[in-house]
Image (tube, rainbow, N blue to C red; front, side, top):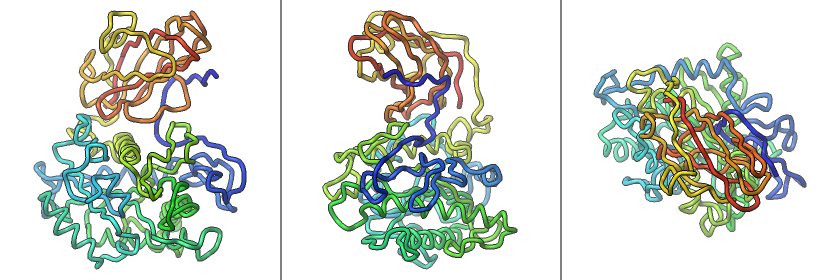
Amino acid sequence: MVRKKVTALRFAGALLLLSTGSARSQTAFVPLTQMGSQTYLGFPGGLYENGTNGPPSDHAAAGAARSALVQPLDTSGNPSAAGKIVLLSIGMSNTTQEFCSGGGLPPCDSWTFVGQALTDAAVNHSTLLLINGARGGQSAATWDSATDTNYDRVRDTDLANAGATEKQVQAAWVKVANPGPTISLPSVSSDAYTLETQMGNIVRAMKTRYANLRLVYFSSRIYAGYATTTLNPEPYAYESGFAVKWLVQAQIDQMRNAGIVVDSRAGDLNYTTGAPWIAWGPYLWANGTTPRSDGLAWLQADLQSDGTHPSQSGQRKVGTQLLFFFKTAPTTRVWFLAGCSSGAACGSFYTLAPCRLIDTRNPTGPYGGPALAAGVSRSFVLTGQCGIPTTATAVSLNVVSITPSTGPAFLTGFPGGLPLPLVSTVNSGAGQIRANNAVVALGGGGDVQVFCGQGAGTSHLVVDVNGYFQ
C-alpha cells in the first residue's frame, strides 16, 4: 500500500487509531488523541477541548508567558547567570523507571529520559538540571499534600545531592496513579474522578513547596492490557487519560471564569495565585500492538511479567517520547534546548547552501551505499555534516527516491529513536525518480532514520539539506 505523501513531517504525538467493538474490551479503546468527535461512555476525547490535541490559544499564550519567566536561579531563588533550572519528576514506579532508573537515584539508565538527554548535544547542559523525584510505590495519595514526606525526601536527597534547592524547581513532569482501582467510568465514584482530585491537590502542594514552579506537564498511564495483577489494569490505565484531560481543562475553564473555580473536583487551579500553569506532556497510551499514526505501539515484550511496569524497551519508548516532547513543545524548548538557552531566537530557521548529505549510489559508507533494502530502516547521523550544528533539532531536506526495483514504493524519514510513523516522505513506482521536500526532526543522536517501504528489492536514496532549526 502506498502511504499518503506529506510535505513536512511532524511528530508531536499520537493522531489516528480507529478501534471497533465494545468500549469495555481491553483492546477496543481509542486513544484520546484520535477520538475526534467520538466519545467514550459519553465522555468526549482529545487531549484538549473540542476533540483537539493542542492547547487553545488563550491557554497556550499563558503558558508561553510563564515559560519566558524560566531562567537560571541561585539556591536562594534569585536570578543568576551561574544558577540552575530544575526540571523535576514526580510520581510512582513507572515514572522513575521511565525518567531515570528503577531505584530512583542516579546514575540514570542510558535508555531512560535522563539517560538519553544527557548524551543529546541539543539539550541545555549548562543551566538545566534533570532531577528525578519519583519513586516506586509512591501513589498519587503520597504526593497530594505539601506535608507529605515525599517532598522532604526530594528536598533532602534528590535536590540536595544535585546541589539544588526547592527554590530552583521551575518545571515538572508528573505521572501518578492509584494501586488496586475497582470502580471505572462512568461511575461518579470512579478512580478517574478520584485521580483528578488528587492531581489537583498535587499541583497545589507542589506550588507550596516550589515557590518558583511555573510549568507542570502531566502524562497518563501506558497501555495495561497485558496486566496479570490488579495493580492498575485496564480500563483504569486508559481512563487515567480522562483524569488528566479534565484537570487541564479545569484550569482553562477557571481562568476564563474570572478565576472562579468551575470544576470542584479539580479545585482551585488559578495560575495567578496558588497554582502553576498545567498542560499535557506526552500522551503515552497506545492500543497494544496496533500502532498509532506516529508508530507507537505496546508489545508484550515492552512490559515486565506483571504487564504493568515497563521493561527496558518500554522504558526506552517513554524516555524517547519525553525527550522529543521537551525538545519540541513551545513552552519547553526555550529553556530545554542549548540553542535557545544561550539567548538565540528559539525555533529559528537557519538557511544553508544546498549540500548533499546522502547518496546511496556512491561507494559503501555511512552516507553512501548500499541501496536501501525493502522493509528496513537505515540510520544517518546528520549533525556535523554540511554545516548542521549539534544543537539543531530539525532539518529541511530534499528527499529523492531513485529507481526502486519494485513498486509501488515509499520512503519515510523520521527521528532516530522514535517509532516508524504511518506517513511517507516520498512515493514512487518501480523504476521512477521522485522527489519531495520535508522537514524532519532529529533524534537524540542528531540522527534520522529512513524506512524503505516496498514489497521486495532495493531503492536508492539521495538527500540534500538546505537549512535547519534549533
